Length: 369
Picture (tube, rainbow, N blue to C red):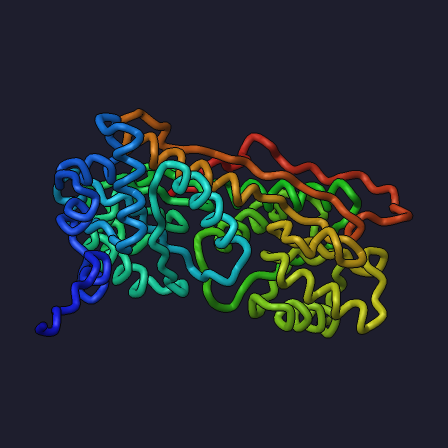
């Protein structure tokens, strides 16, 4: 008797091949290629038993649908592009998580790129993402170079800008007024009796959010009677915040309160005060911006501005989903902000002073983009 050739199971034959194809799944499940396609597209025109059989075969063979072919057929990739300055910052990662939660529930996926606050990198990412035919794109901030704005305007897909506000969005903007937020924070300090108020901003990675906070500080302090203001620039880090405190103390000017453009710098400032034995807030008040998790836990707890970053991400994703479904959406969505007064500015003994007058009628609502 001759030696019988070894007969491999179908699944083994497919696994040894370079790619599992749609026709392989159909043949193994003993159905037509069209049936497999309908299962993958979620069509209701497939019985429960057949659907289960096809899905089991897909799992067995490790079949991965060709998303490019599907997008060409349906004009949808179900991919959403998102560009943020950096992935390591809570401010941005929470927005991304909020987007992912909503998009995942609608069968969509995120492509994430980090620009590092570079206009050139941002433009390169936009072009690279658009080449992959995303259904929509999210970008951080509202001020862009001419080339970036042109690329987004000509993309032909929904564009959502986030984390600030503008009266002239490219398409839709979801955020809050950084200008108004810092104005309200400074008014809180003024109402608490502080008169010598300094603002600590960044030396690099300048952006429209940080810029609006500085502009808001300058606007409100210049209109408040009896308030002495100054500005310090430092690195956006714990060490940078500590350096700002040392710089303020080394000056010949008296300072009663430091408002930091970020909580990261503010926490660094608080830690430096502890090292130098400075009583916060009796000798020096400290305030931040962002309400990071550490703000409520550090001692003394940090006065700051709370932003619903998860909410920004969820709202941005909801707008994208609605736009792709053909629904109308508002162009400007303001999620607001909340002042959180904590121990770092709350004096035990307050000197009774008449609060300076700050005009309310000029309170800017939406900075121009």
